Length: 312
Image 1: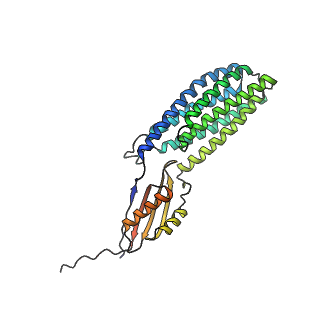
Image 2: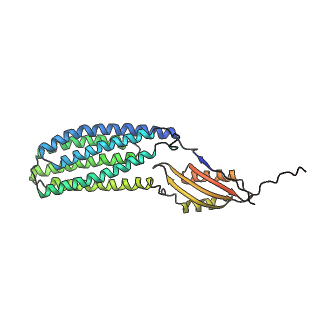
Image 3: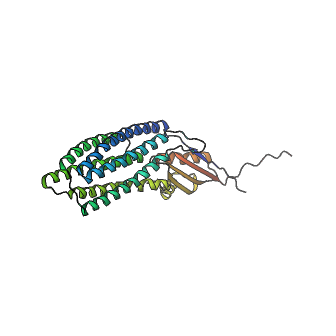
């Protein structure tokens, strides 16, 4: 009969929760400031778009309204991520940031579709645009969006939630630039179709950002393998560098969020190997080579347990 030594532990060493919490609070403050700026100027842009008859301004105002809600969702994602783990959520709420970013990606796609539909209708049924008023509001919007973009750009750009917020504000920034160009063309040539044409261009750029965000966050939400952590890569590395392991199999790798990856695996130790030492070697190797600190290792061994003393 073979003996078995099972070690199944979840290692959190090397993971700085204090640092993550600090990053979360900083991101939350930055997004709150950007949301306030976005919502305040949105009101002025709606009024200007209605008065001037500019689709570029109205589209940008709708974009900013969506962004204000998206930034609020991103803020809520950061806020929840600060909550500690509990009995029902052993990893806490950090995955909610990824979910918020995924929803923001969908919002970007939906917004781009709406802008394109409105632009096509405006091309079919053109209406006059007041270029002067359009130019004034667009310039003010550009300044506001530059400030909001600078605030968010100073945050953690590897954070998917922050990246989603950045894409929304970047879309606002592009919308303001498009409105300025449209106003200048209209003032100098009177050619109003430039307004919806530039709106379509901005919508295309926004949709690219939305697609990239959905692809990145969707991969995490379906627990896809993180980049550089394929089971084959891990198995090859451990086999070459951990001679105490006879076989390494049942490797699974996935991500909790954009910065935290998790790995589980089964390893069979040679009879003379110490299972606990082997487990520590594997965890140290995964941390050193792949930067993974959340590791679960189950070790089995054919080493026979010592026979009990005969007390007859």
